Amino acid sequence: MIDLKKEIEKINNISVSIEKDILLIKNNYTNYTSKILYKEVIDFRNFFGPNMVECLGLLFEDNGELIITENDFVFNVIQDEFVKIEDLPPLISTTEVERDFMFFREKDNFDGNFDIEFAFLARLNCFITSGKNKGIKFKFENELQKICKKRGLDIKETENYEEVLKQNIKKSDSPTTIFDESFKVEKSDFEFDYQENLTKKLDANNDNFTQNTINEIILWKVNRYANFDKKILSLINSISPKDREIDINKTKEILKLLLDTKGVQLVMASTILRFRNEHIYQIIDQRVYRMIYPNEVLSISSYKSEVNTNKAISIYLNYLCDLKKVCENLNIPFEKSDRILYMADKRVNKNHKLRNS
Image 1 (cartoon, one colour):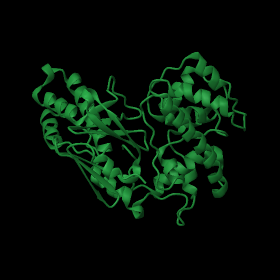
Image 2 (image 1 turned 45 degrees about the vertical axis):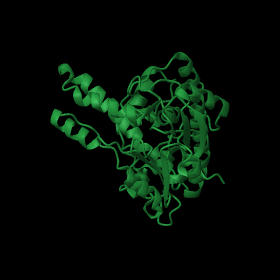
Image 3 (image 1 turned 90 degrees about the vertical axis):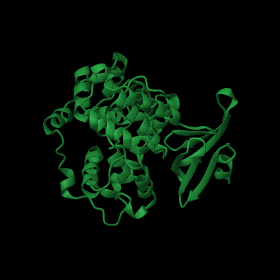
Image 4 (image 1 turned 90 degrees about the horizontal axis):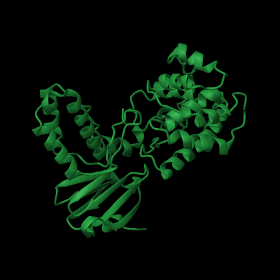
């Protein structure tokens, strides 16, 4: 077994300690520390960066990476699945984030342009959240909160990374799943009351999907608009609402096109397919996922690449297969299972936050 601590400490200015399941990596040059769960690191890579600087990249289960150098931490930028910020870099360093903060601090009111000021703040907050994802707490966060309050800006506070780590370690605090002895499906779980009128309309639709149908499905889910070309619509419509067996190759082709579409991630793609044919497709989301996979979190990179797309497709196809087995064990209809387990999760896990919410 590779001694990860020893490998990381080969980088100059870096010291490492392990506390229970937490890996503490300190950069003695910047005085920043990254606190991460040891078990979330699946691999690492050694390489040379610009000016032949020695680098070590830690690779994580969510396809993210923390790059360690002798004078900085570099991490992947994570975007919200539905609220997108244009032109963000795929990677950023703690030094660059601090530089952005100093610019924001010195730029008093952005010449009175509130939209530009708020957009810059949203960008900065995205970097802070991405850093928190890799266990990095920025030194300027308290000052940023005070500046925002003074300027009348609202900034979403990211979760305290130490609390997140503690929650991940304490198995006794893990969300309830279908495998807990106390869990059983209750009558109220069948009472799906989300957007009742639009839900009934979409459930009853057996016609070919049009752009308007897609818009209504997206409105049903998150109030967002995505534009689909005729090829995607044609492929979706080639799935008959009467089908009872999944066509794996066709499903992969459709998912690839959907996931390559701007504004569409796996949750939205599965929602579109579910309304086309509920008998072979169901929605995958954080609530249902954590109910059927104990101690796991649905984590899919928003960065569009062939590797991430293929991983998302694999996750969804395996999810459908496992969900059918769950339905058999719980004696619930597959075509309603995403809604039943969604409601069950809201009931039994109301005290457990969803990721990034």
